Image (tube, rainbow, N blue to C red; front, side, top):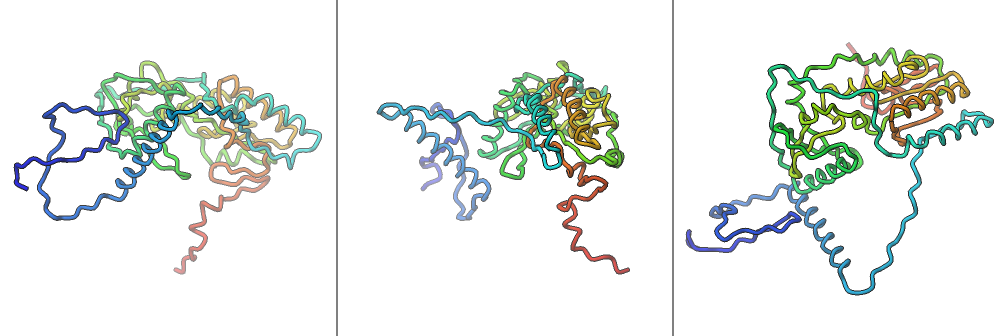
Length: 359
């Protein structure tokens, strides 16, 4: 083929929307073939294969839905049972089982899975006096990651965590794999954190927290359901949290993950809510709350007091991470038992086979 001889090129559209090009539109540059093999990067090939398989499945489902014939009756799945926290009744006397079940029934709304809203505080972002707006272009993402970003953006819109934005500043988005095949949605706020005045709210010492458990024989651990998202952001600072992706510009209505002062705002809110009980019947470390007592009867009363304050403040809890009436709990990287404090084995398994020093 001569250098200026016309030839055909196959274009593939991996998006969901039809693309129309006017005659004469330049879509790329063709280079002469040099006989050098350039294998496609394995990760990119896998992402394209997954994307094509997903598109093909959607097209098949759409074709089946529009096929001729009487429509099938929809299958109504049974209502999903609400998730409940883990409760250990082994150490609870039989005559107190009724009180325990009554306590769980009284606060079952806190484990409903809905996102709460803490009414104790609002997150503010104070910038340095000489700080200027920052704009970061979206990071490159493969088709599979773009689908994940789109899914998580839709989830946050449905929950009321974000809303569309027209701010002049924005930050890029990445999705980080988590154990179990899920992804964590992260906004790269490093340049914003460099320009933010640091919040010096003190975080409690871990050793003080562990020492305060003392001679407790029964404990309950509570974990907030997406704790950061339960704290509202100040209206005047929402544009500062704007992020950019292929789905558009959005800003956070709630406290996002990744801000330098996010831990201090969450800890301050829980300290205000539980100010009358901290260091007496409960401890707070970031979004982890532990309630401790000497007897089961006392623990029912202490746990009810803590849950009442949290419910009044609008807090929702994650049932899979709440463990009630336990004689042994994991807290701050340790195993807490009555009169004992042990290390979690998975945290020290790499040190176990190490030989002691010989010199």
